[in-house]
Image 1: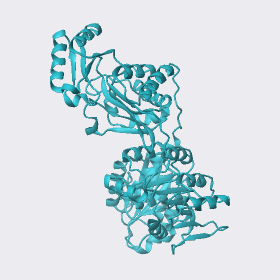
Image 2: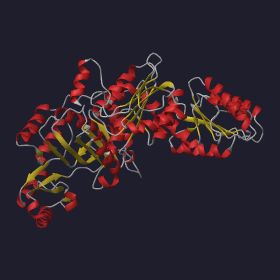
Image 3: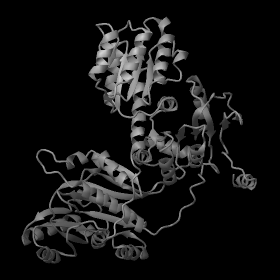
Image 4: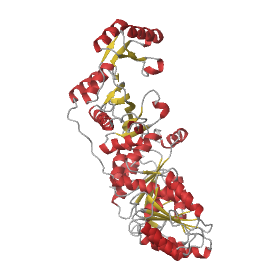
Length: 591
């Protein structure tokens, strides 16, 4: 492969593959069919890259049956030269491409992907199906592509952070692509449903609520206009049920009236052909109304064994209302992301970078490893994260002296190189308010833990707030990833964690705080005071700043971080560092 690549580059050209299905380009000035597929799709504004050649054959066949036109289709194969990131940047500049589709089994350079996708996605939507979601699927992807299997939660949040539309299936991908390629993005989440059958209208309404869309409240003027021409049995609320006798003209008038309503952002037109001969006329009326929609999204559901009448094109049509709603919800969420400001990385002038580097360099000089509690305390304080006063002691009498120095009440935490989860082995005692209590707690821990316990941490008790977790890990594929979510001893069980790839903007921090379910507790529940969300956001941003100054950090876990009514304090933390060893270039993927 390398010899072939060198020869190609010597000519000034780029190589797709090898081990790929090939390339299609429908540009009339090119009209290239450089694949072994028998299908040449119609020209259109959708570009697609597939990491699977065999799957590409099925994709082309399925897309043609939906009449989806391609600008370019590329099977990337081994990606020895041209990568998916290269293609996204090419399509960003291609005037014939409006929508970008990706079937991925692995990321060659996910950090670069995130940067490129975030920039390109502000202009052109990127829709991804990422294989390897489950543990078994990830192993299959690894054996097929040689890519390292990664936690799907990190992948999902990387795509969320980058504004990428992730779909669960290829069918859903093309549902979304059909909408994006043929309709404007919905300006909001308020949906009106127009139907000639009550049942599908109710199903669509249920699907809207389940997918985070809102049923629009039609204004009185709209409902008065509808009553003027619809039969008395019709329902002029939302969904608008015109009843089974609805004619093509009634579809046109109803759609025009609903689209003119300022409370409506998108319309789903549902038609069940009571009289099959009316289907083409209804389809034509829907298309005409959509052409007058003035920036609002119009999609249709034709529930007919005869399929979708040709006059409906290019209005997207779906066989069932749930599929229509799912595609619309994906588009609405993407439109909201696109309207959101990009955000900026927050600078903190009070960070003591000299102290940070001194602590990290000292640990790296002896080969790395877990920082001791005093180093962790000093590191967090140097980056501006509040921690309680503490002392590291080696025996029972030192523990008593430290407790008296700090003043009661105190916490006692077992310490030892192998004691990473102290609470799991009963190595944490809180609220010790006397010398006797400290002596007893230390003796009990030492008796149970034996040689594992080389000492203990005596820590001043801090005010208790809402306990959350803020952490970071150096992922082999993604680089540093920052995490936030529910903290305490049940963090793994609750699995309420949001991830973002470092470095974080203020917008990233706000989104990950909003994503985790535990954030609702911060607002105050059952009479409790609201916690300081701004202080939490600052801690997360300072962790990202710490990673920028100290990339040797491999693992960082602040758990719990107690978010108070004012401020936040790191009650416990652990940090591991390693020397930085440059990895192999990620451009070439081993297969």
